[in-house]
Image 1 (cartoon, helix red, strand yellow):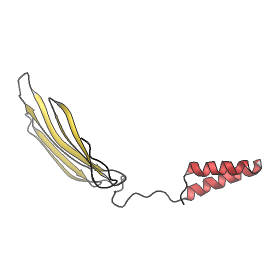
Image 2 (cartoon, helix red, strand yellow; image 1 turned 30 degrees about the horizontal axis):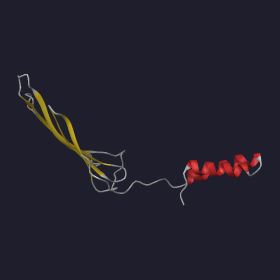
Image 3 (cartoon, rainbow, N blue to C red; image 1 turned 180 degrees about the vertical axis):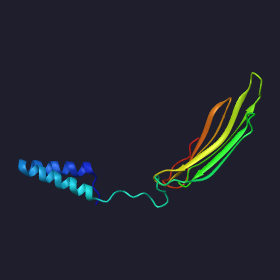
Image 4 (cartoon, rainbow, N blue to C red; image 1 turned 90 degrees about the vertical axis):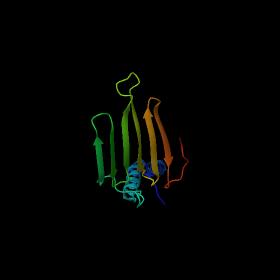
Amino acid sequence: MRYDWLTLFLFGTVLARNKGEGDAILVILACVALAAAAPQAQRPASVPNPDDVQLLRYEAENDGLGSYKYAFEQSDGTKKEEQGELKNAGTDNEVMSVKGSYSWIAPDGATYLVTYVADENGFNPTIEQGPGSGGANRG
């Protein structure tokens, strides 16, 4: 059975009220010690340690004329790819058009993917939740 700090503190407070005032502190301290000794929640094996993230891949290109693309991937499962180009350069309708995606693995093991287009129509993302905790797609 697993207890958190608050549960044990409240349990100790109830016990202490039923005992003498001198015993109250001992009961509360015993409950706090029990909570401190309890095993902590474990991260699923499929989720890497967030304190040990490595850059696995990085690519970047920029033509200096309004077009670019870049991508990176990390050992924690985080990925991002993006490309952009300047449309209608030099006109009143000049606009940067960007397409891309990024994904990450949540602490519960679920993979999230966001794909997007950002242009004269604004930022339009599509969000998908993949395997892990089970959820619905949103767009």
